Image (tube, rainbow, N blue to C red; front, side):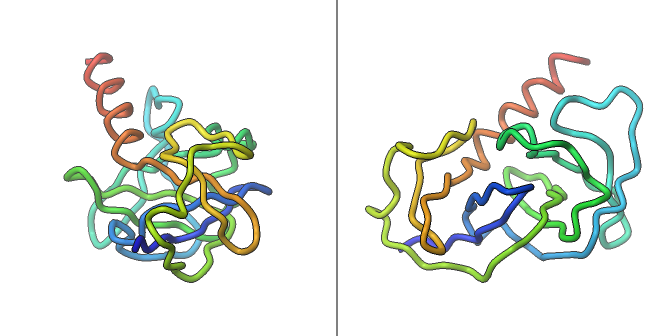
Length: 142
């Protein structure tokens, strides 16, 4: 059984594993950083520290609008704490492991497959793969 959090950016829903989601906060007040990468756009103040803001809009072919997104997922994975601005978040959904199938209808980079959630197929975000990609890009830029 997998527990997934459905979230939406623009008009596109996707899901991610619920375990790494530490909190759902309000609007992300992103502080820009010099020389941002395509996915890490700035930092967000969270519990007295600055955490990286990851922009997933490009993964779902949507416009980047970090400060306009009303919700922020705070995610802890791979030793990192990240802010992921989204337009909507739905309650956790429990699905059988075999309900996640290879992508047929949806297309999303860093997806482990798709699953029917809220009556429609949505891609399942591979958070570890995304983080590894970000970390490898950041280390290459140093």
